Image 1 (tube, rainbow, N blue to C red):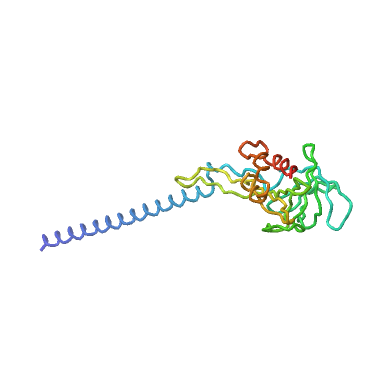
Image 2 (cartoon, rainbow, N blue to C red):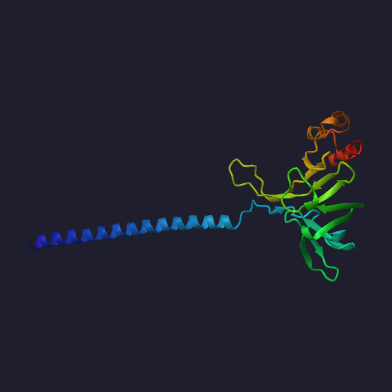
Length: 239
C-alpha cells in the first residue's frame, strides 16, 4: 500500500510540473508574439513620422516668388496705384503689401482691371480673361500676360501644377521632393478674333494659320530657337 501511495504522489508531481511547463511555454510564446507586433507597429510609426529621403518642396505657387514693383488699376477705378505685388498663379489671386505696413494681403483676379510688373527693366502687362473670347475658355478668371498687343495678339496664361514626390516605389523615378512645376499656356488671336490655344511649334502655328505656312517655315523653328516666345512675337510681326 505504501509503495502504491509513493507511485501516485510521484505521478501527481510529474503532472503538475508538466502542466506548469506547458503554461509557461504558452505565456512565453504569447509575449514573444506581442513583442514582435509592437516592434512592427513602432517601425511603421517611425516611417510615417519621418523619412530621411524626403527633400521638401521645390518652388512656390507664385509667379516671381518675390514681391515686385508694380502698377495696378482696380476694376471700376481709373487711377493707377503703385504697390509691391506678385501673382499666386494656382489660386489666381494678387498678393501685395499695403503701403502703410508690412502685412501681406491677397485679392482675387476679379478685382483687377490691369496689372503691370516693372521687372528686369521691362514692363510686363497682365490683364484678366473675363473679357476675352476663347475657343476653349480656361477655368476661372485667369491672369494673362500680353506678349503681342497688335493683331494677331499673343497671350500667355502662367500656371503651375503640384507634382508629388515619388520615391517609395521599387521601380519609381526616385523623385524625393514635391514641386510646383510651371505649365504656362499660350493663345493666339485668330482671324475671327477668337483666341486659340497653341504650342510654340511650327506644326501648331501652321494649323492655326494654314495660309501662312511658308512664312512660318522660313521664320520659325522651335528646335533651333533659344527663346521661342520672342521668336513667335517676331514671326507674328511679319503677318
